Image (tube, rainbow, N blue to C red; front, side, top):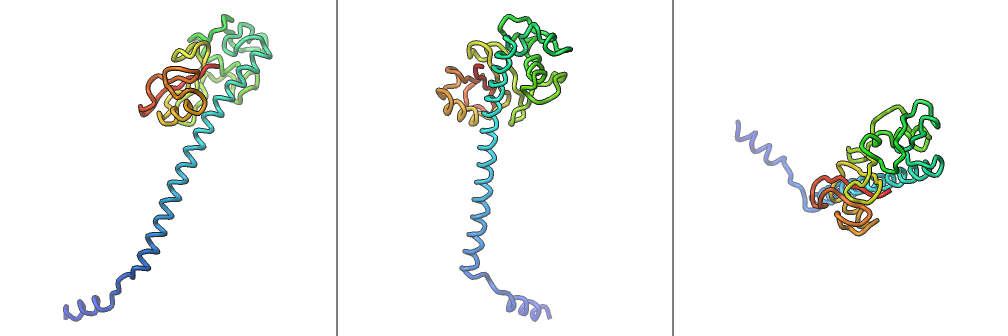
Length: 188
């Protein structure tokens, strides 16, 4: 009896033809290609957003300076422009105590969106934050740096907009771009 069942199962089964296997392989290849292309598009969009964020911070920084005569965060008269805003010391440098004030002043001036009373730094697309300080990674002068940037992304930004070297030029990092994550700074 088991032999009859076994014979019936094996005689009813058909294998796939080479054409059917080839069609399946082409479909799988197209799916994998589409997924890889989609991942590349997402990565490129994040790189563009990162660079646009830096450009936006730079534009807001200079707009504030043009309007009020001091850098945001360093403005000793911020409280007169915006009641309740904390003042900076007016020395032209973003010192450690003034770092959280930069984005607050920009928000008070409506040059960046968000709650001006918030003391948080804006996030970057890679899970870190944007911070403005004096001479980060020796860029010379006030600069903005981004935390937790993938090394390959930081390299792309540096090669496209500067000299490609992590330790010189207008865009610098805290270590080489072959590391998984870096902090990248650019002068304002």
